[in-house]
Length: 289
Image (cartoon, rainbow, N blue to C red):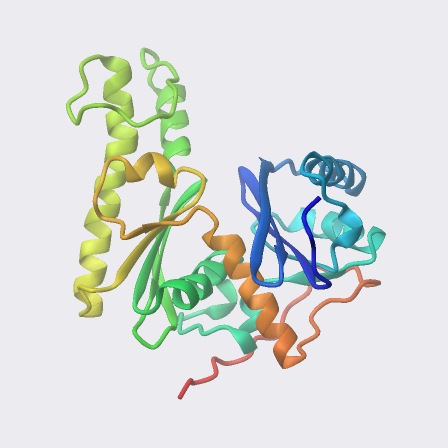
């Protein structure tokens, strides 16, 4: 069994399709997992799944001191809080409401997705600013961090799987094909043509948008980071990325939690179950010297 410290964090990134999890001992990532995001999951089911993941690697769920999660599926927030209560862990929701420890210059900070906030924090912390993050998930999100380390905006496009599913559903003669990188840019048959359109097309879209964003920033040296469940597949079809980091989001969640610890920010408690529909108060970005 790994030797664990006294400050264990379980970071959760709840996406529309997959939920990524990372167990951190301090700032060190001990283990990571992925599972499908199922909106029907109850706290009981999540608890059982977590115990199975931990047992698989010789770990104990009882070692977790806090669960910090960022997600785009609000109805699962209550279930995760219930799990945190069961294991006597603090529950922290990461998002734009944690602006005291993040830097947001978006037009509407309260509307920025929690995963994008985490990506921006991780990009600046681990790779420096300016930076551009391309996150290949259910949607393809592109996040831009300026030279001062502030998240300023980006782009949202349909994800690769969504595009392929729509094509198979709407085009009678085009069946669903495996999602994998093609060997050629010119497809030799229908299946390969679909792969080229999906994967190489996603790479080309990223190349074009990143190039335009660099010009608009006036910083051709901005570090470009690919992340998300499909980043590895797309990265094989382009040289646009300086870094491929599949754990970027959960690393950002951990970093935000650590900053909150240092500032003594209390955003969640063991006994609380939040009203996920309640309005939040957002702090203004704190200028950095």
